[in-house]
Each structure stands twice: as structure tokens, then as C-alpha cells.
Image (cartoon, rainbow, N blue to C red; front, top):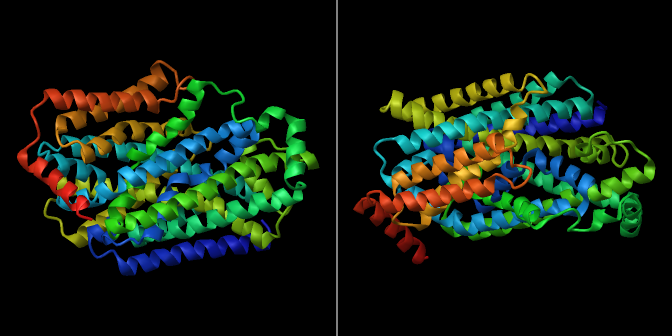
Length: 492
């Protein structure tokens, strides 16, 4: 690793830990502060935190790599995500912010499900918590693996140095500062990603001879690279765009809506968040296509298309100090998602297991301490799962987006908009969505035909409606709370 690159990365790590210390001072006196930031996030922090925790390394590695291989036809997934994120801000954000406060100040998604339906059996809380903890522990391990491989491929360091370096810094600032630190570091990481995804394709475009040079080179490689419909069928387009359905059920994203300072700030957060997402997605897509032209012109061999951003961020185009900053953008994408997943898992373990089943009368300081212990415990399990860089955990995690989207998405939407939905409908739908996704992947093996979130989402939605119609209706108090939420939003 060059000295300049090392300086830039060290400065990035110091900044992240410094924010964690600030969060420790500001918002960890009670569990609501540690796990939800006291519901006082501003719109800019909310939107960039949601965006950064959403995209992970996929934004700088996976999407450019897909564009490098397939050309413009890989952009259908990005379009689906853009539409899904916008719908999430419109449909979920305002109502969830009001409803979680009205529902006895629910501070986790399982907590919201239980209080929304007044489910005294605790089944909804337990089932949803298990789904969150299991999938997010696996999800976290994939991020740690990505960090280890980045250190290995980009910096020439040991995989295990990257493993502990990435996990160690994330755990430190998450453990210290809780939700506020995670959200503020996500904001900074979102800014770094934004700058990097403008700089890299712009400088590479100049180096590749501008638009004419890139177009001529790509046409020589494969004329279909610039065809949006190349190799795509109608089912293929639906499958790619259906990634957007996943947003409604991602706990680490929608928890930001619960923490925003006021429902009045949702509009500003939406405008900032969607602008950020549009620019960064275009930057990521451009990096893949322009990068292909750049390395083709120079005869640079590239064994792994997903490393095209790393290649362009190297000393081919930038000095080591700027290159270190740009490589920190990949770490930012990886770490922002890991920290969010750690905190959501910790929230479920603390609020949905420890507080409910072990220590119902636990004080606030005790709950904060347990939350920190849970962050460390989940991280240690994730590191253990990531110890083998070829672990098949990554195969499982690649389906987590579909699993969360199908299990929670329709439950969240219908719980916000359908007063007659019952707790049995919610529970049955959650199970139906999860099982359908697993069957589609591992039994029917149809993932290559249609993305599993589509049948899973349909199964969950349909099951919720049917079971709610045949099961005993919700309590009067449940319907009254629903009406009160509608009235509060209608009065704004």
C-alpha cells in the first residue's frame, strides 16, 4: 500500500471513530436514544443514511461489474430500485413515522408489529425477530468478507487484516454511539460515495476520449452493449425491476423513517435521498461502461469485472491520496450497511428478546449496555462465518433482500393502509412470503427464471388478505389507533 493511500484510509477510519465518540456523548442515555436516536434525525441525515445503508458494496462493485459485462441491459435493476425507493418514501415513510409513535412508541419493526395489532401472544414479535437476527447476521458476514477481499485485492494486505480492520472500526463506532453514530457515519459515507461516483466516471471519460471515444470503443467490443433491451425478455425486465419491491420490507432502511425528526421533514428527505440515489446510480452505471472502454483502449487485463471501480481509482487516473479517498468510498459503502445491520440485529435481541423474556423491568442504562453487548456478539458471529473467504454464506445472503422484501414488505404496507388487517393475517403472510422465497430458490430452483421476490411478495400479500378476512376482526382499540394515524396525517 502506498503512503498516500494509507494516509487517506487512516484519516477515514479516525473520522468514523470520532463520530462514534460524538454519538456516545449525545444519544445513549436510554434505549430509545441508543436504538433510534431519540427520533431526532434531520432530513439530510435520514435520507443519506437510508441510501448509504441500502446500497452497500453493490453500488461500487456489483452494479459497475454488471454494466461492464452486460452493458445497458443491466440498468433495469437500477431503474427498479429507483422506483421502489421513491414509492417507499411516498407510501411508507410518513405513515410509519406517525404510526410507530402512536403505537406506544414502537422502536423496532417487531415491536411495531406487536403493538400495531395488540398481539399479546408475542408470536408476531418472536417470528419477525428471528427472521431479522438470522438473516442480518448472515448479511453482516457478507459485508465483512467484502471488506477483507477489498484489503486483499486493492491494498495487497492479508484478507484477515481486512476482515478485522473493517469489522473492528464498524463495531467500535456502532458500539459507542448507537443509532445516532450509525446514521451520522452513514451520512458522511453517503457524501464520500456521491463524490467518488462523480469523480471516477468523469475522469475516466476524459481519459477514454470523451463520449465519442467511449462509444466507438464499445461498438467495437460489442454493439449490443449500448442496447437497453439486448438479451432481455419481458419476464427478465419484470424480474430485474422487481428488486424495487424489496424496499418496503428492509428493516435497516425503514427504521430511518421511524427516527426522522418530524413527518414534515419526510418531503425534504425524499428530495435529498432521491437526488442522491439518481446521481450515484448513474455514476455507478457509467463507471462500468466507461471503465470497459478505458481498459480496452489500454489493453489492461481484468479478471474480475466487479473490480473495475478499484482499477479506475488506482494510480492509472489519480494520485495516491485521492485514490485512497476513492477506495475509502468502497469501504464506506460496505461499512454503512454493516453498521445498520448490526444495530437492527442488536435492537431485536435487546428489545424483542432480552427485555420481553429475560428482564421485563430492566432499566434504561441496562438496556443500552445489553444493546452494546449484542452488537459485539453479532459481529463476532459474523466474523466467524466470514473466516473462510469462500464460505457459502454469501450464497445465502444474496437472497436476503428477497427474503426480507417478501416476508415484511406486504405486512408493512397493509398494516399501514388496511384497518381490517388482523394479527393472524400478518403472521400467516410473513411465513408464506418467507417459505415461498425459500422454495423458489432451493426446491423449484427458479431464481434464474423469475426473481424470487415476485412470487414471495404475491404469496405474502394474498395470504394476509385471505387470512384477515376469515379470522376474527381486529379489536376496536386497534382500529381507533389506525383512524387516529389517518386523522393526524390528514390534518397536516
